Image (tube, rainbow, N blue to C red):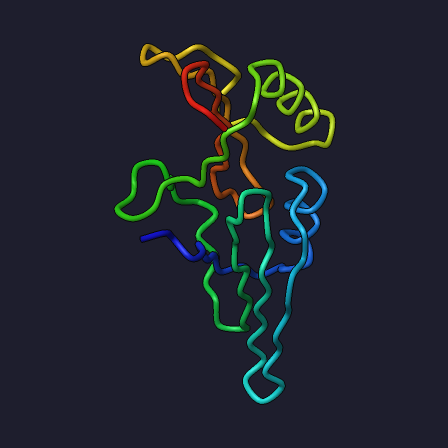
Length: 135
């Protein structure tokens, strides 16, 4: 069994689409808008087949003040990269783009090298590299 996709609610689909296209090389695959309800949905595809659904509706509540890493439910979305240096370059690119890092690049005690950033909705997006894992 494979995960088909992950989905997130937003109040600003345009900003999230731009973030995932610009910084994670995502590709906008399909879009759907229900004019009767105001619901909007789109899928962003990534290399390797992973997809993220971005959904927007007028009644979505803002939870920017919460601490997602300490709440019940999904805590982050992780991407595996091919080299440790990619993580350092990505971290600097996010900082240059005005985004806040949730975790600076660091070697973890389990052998992973990783960092994480807050996307425009403050979802935690993690980037990992481990030498003995194939990408």
